[in-house]
Length: 372
Ligand code: GLY
Image 1 (cartoon, rainbow, N blue to C red):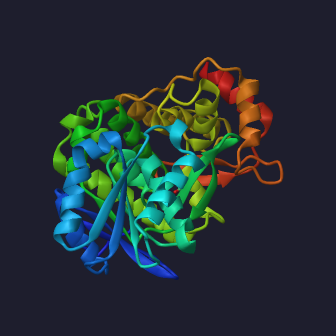
Image 2 (cartoon, rainbow, N blue to C red; image 1 turned 90 degrees about the vertical axis):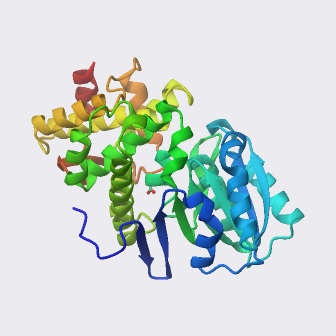
C-alpha cells in the first residue's frame, strides 16, 4: 500500500544509501528543463548531450534544447534510430562517438528524451562513458514515465535476449511532462496503461479502484488531465517504494516483473513488433492471475476484476495461438531463472503479490489450457 507522503505531490524523492534524486511531474516541464537541471544541482556551462529519436525530436527536441541553452548549458543533440530492433550496442557506440566528438567530461551530462528504449540506451551510455557520467531521464511515453525512467535499469539487447547487456545507473533527475503524452499514439498510451494496472495489483489498491472508475479507459486521450497526473504520481510512488527497498533486485524488486515473465515469452514467440511490450504484459498478467487462482492464492473474483480492467483499458486478454511447450521452454531460458527454478510473481489480493518458485510445469500447462 502506498504510504501517505508529506512531499510535494509533484516532486517525489527517491532516496538510496548513496544519494537521492527527484521525480518531477510537471505540465510544460519540458520548457523548464534547463531550470530543473539547475534545481537538481547542475551548473550553467555544463556540457549536455541530448539523446532522442527522430519522432520525438520532431515534436520536442528543439523545445528541450532551447530550454537548456537559455539557462546557459552547452547542449548538443544526437538522434538515434527508433525501435526495439535498434536497441543495440551499435547505437551505444553512436552515443559514445558523439560524447567523444563533443568532448564530454566527467562533469558532463547525458539526457534521454524519449521512451524506454532511448532511456535505457542513454542510461547505459552514461554508465559506461568515462566509467560513468550523470544522466537525466525525460520520458515521453506513459510506459517510460511510470516504469523505465525510474530506478536505474539501463541496457541494450543481445541477439540471445532482451536487455542482456546492461548496468544499474541511477538518473540524477526524472522530469515527466504529461503534455508530451498528447502526441503519443493511442495504442502506445494503452500499452503504458498495462504497467499502471500492474502497480494497482502489486502495490496500490486505491490506484486499481481509481482505474476501475475512469470512464473510457480504452481511449486514454479522453482521460481527464488531473486523472492522468494522479495516475502518474501514484505509479511513480509505487515504483519508488519498491526501488528504495531493493535497488539491485536482490529480492522484492522482482515484483515489478509481475506479468512480465509470461509477457516476455509472448513477445519472444510472437516476434518483437507483433505485440507492444505493454500489450504482452497485459496478457501476462491475465495468465499470472489464472495461475494464482489455480494455486488457490487469489480469489476468482479478483482475477475477474483484473481481467475486466485490462479489457476496459482496450488491452488484449487472450492467449495467442502458441504451443504451451514453447512457452515453457522460453520461461526456462529467462535471465531471472535461478538454479533452474522459474520465479513467478502471483497476486494474493488486489495490491499485494508474492514471489514464488514452487510452480510446477504441470500447473503452468493446466493454467495455459484453462485460458485456451
Ligand atoms: N522495470 C522493472 C524494474 O525497473 O525493475
